[in-house]
Image (tube, rainbow, N blue to C red):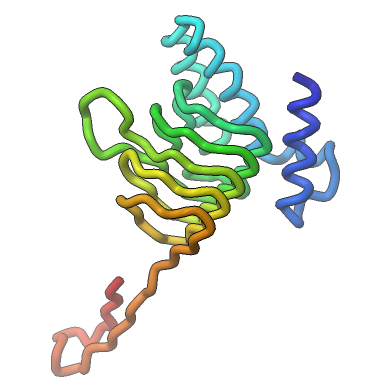
Length: 183
């Protein structure tokens, strides 16, 4: 257990340039606390204490802003940087050495049982506000850019980014003369 905690602290030091030392990481990094508490809630879930596991994950969400379902399977050395708004669903699987920025959602799209959430490979970067929906697979070493919404799988070593198109309507095309952003 202590080895895993040290490993998590080392991962934050390597991936977050704002992390200055181990004490600061332990005291002021909500992402590591969310992951550590998830390990406990996941253990509870696997051992049949599902209500207690859900309650603990709810308490952690209120304290950190990071929601990880107790049944989700997380790998090692995951870093959740600026984690507010991160949501990781029940059947999600995340590999090792993954970097997750704020607002990332690993969500489901169907209500019936079975695999409903994404599987994320090893060494993947999930950019801020990216949304991955459904039982898709993100291959190892993939990079998912900020604000990307995905409903299809991404191969290993791929980079996905969303182009934002900005068009300005002429004053005569819009009554209030406002700028419209599409994307």
